[in-house]
Image (cartoon, rainbow, N blue to C red; front, side, top):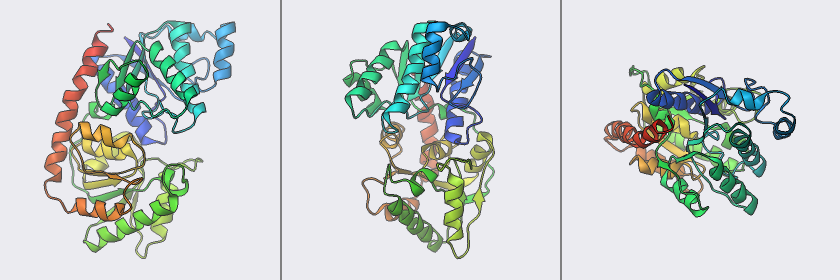
Length: 359
């Protein structure tokens, strides 16, 4: 059995994208033990033609010069992750178009079963985006949503999902807990400078107020990068270093080099507070309480399905730091976090069953 995983890879500086790659592989291995998994993302060059280049794919559709369709037919299934939250137009229409066109190529040119893996579906703000979404779901052999709101979006477009499940991070093995940290605070480079999702100045002020409140409570705070340093502005390392440098006593910064390392780090923490959703999901999946500082609608419905309501929406809560600090004072968080993983395992069963039916 061979499976191709799209829009995720094990080398991405974004550890959330690595979690999608390795989590999807782990889910596939539950279904087809010993499955060979190949990952393909924007920057990877495994395929004969780059999936992120729609013009190149269009030329290949006509010429068949590079053998792309034949290469795809070497796989038994293609698992399309859409980077977890990119089956939407929140990152622009072009990103949605590129990913949708790649899926269409898999379906039409190669005829390989295409699975839209557990992911967020929507929102789709414009007519063109909704048209692309409908076409993508029609091309998919199987469509999975990782939250009920995504399932509702799919149904509103005329293609109800086949499976309602949860995030693939919960398919990963749990490392042994070795207590090493108190509070891990993930500062998002995405929100630190760009005002595309939330007001960046307001976000920086929230992080500062939250940090000050934690220190005043006697908590030991360590910064955690979940998107590693790269030429892109969208990395947590630069934002965390800038924040740390502004403090009288700069906190330490953890810059993990692998998904396994960050999962070990969050397993050893008492609490994780993060603006990257997978920083929080990595924590919850190993039994560590997490307080997400949400910037999009992908957070709340997913966590709601896991019966975890300790979340702050930065778009709606003007007192986000104070709300987060109040949550840190609650008792029983670790016990409730342990229940999240148990619930997630139940939610993964329908995904496993549906994949098994593919053969």
